Image 1 (spheres, one colour):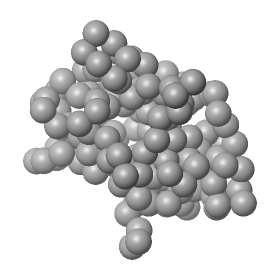
Image 2 (tube, helix red, strand yellow):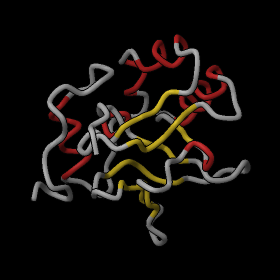
Image 3 (cartoon, helix red, strand yellow):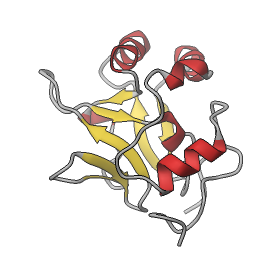
Image 4 (cartoon, helix red, strand yellow):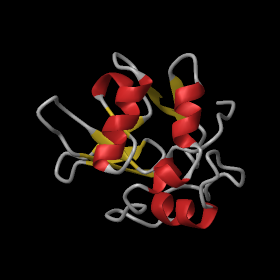
Length: 143
């Protein structure tokens, strides 16, 4: 066991995220988050804008797919909403539900493998999952 997961985060995370921060947020935490706007100090926005189709975001520990975005909105809208709230912000249709759980009492959003991802902070459009980039910077692994 490694905190709430079976092992540490992957050693070669995407988006130039800090591995030590990623391991702390993903595996040894239930309440805290990376600093608001952290994703803006990484190549995240550039990668989203360059992509010709929705991007799959993978668990930084297990490599399982967690979110696919943007869906039913433009890359610009996805980035804009993320900037307004300070974290990559996903909607229900962008969640890979077989690998993601939302805890009823707290709204904490976690992977099925125990990785802390962020929180569901609903707004007038519905559920909005504010997710730490360090938690979804993994590379896909063979299941």
